[in-house]
Image (cartoon, rainbow, N blue to C red; front, side, top):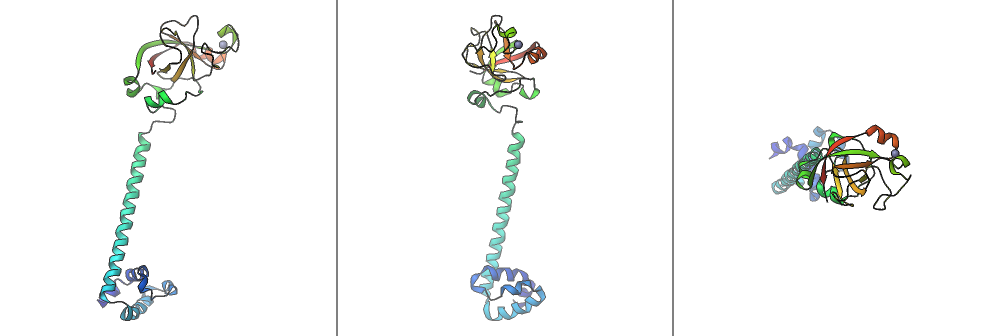
Length: 223
Ligand SMILES: [Zn+2]
């Protein structure tokens, strides 16, 4: 036992502190080198520790070590699963699921093609594919609308990134429409020349409407 105590002197110091009934080593002693402590410890052990108490102290220590290890493992697993979740998460400008597309407000955004906005399998599975549409672009100006600053056919203020004009006999007003490569929009407006497989996408300036020109994209009716 004596040999074992010397061997485990540093562990026992910790164990002794951990067991309140064995608080026979002063706090100041902690600052002393282990060699000096061991003589203090031997003296203390002779009067304070019996084999049951040592066993209790060692058990407490190994229990504390096991708990610390378990905690560290749990933290590591947690960090790993968080990393996993982060790597599965789509980039911020990509919509994550059809349910988000159907429930989250369609906010203003700059209309521009992005390969990160291609239709996901989830979108394809949970929508009605309307086929490839011709996209044109319009702005609030008189040239585009006949009347400058007009409201949409559904009474809203046209907003880039949300408003599109459709043939309402094909796509009912109020529908959420996924334009592949551009994201989700709301059918809010109509136009004399917007018939069948044509969509007019609202943008904030005539220059941008002109730059975007004519595009083609696959259209998915979300609801
Ligand atoms: Zn215009």
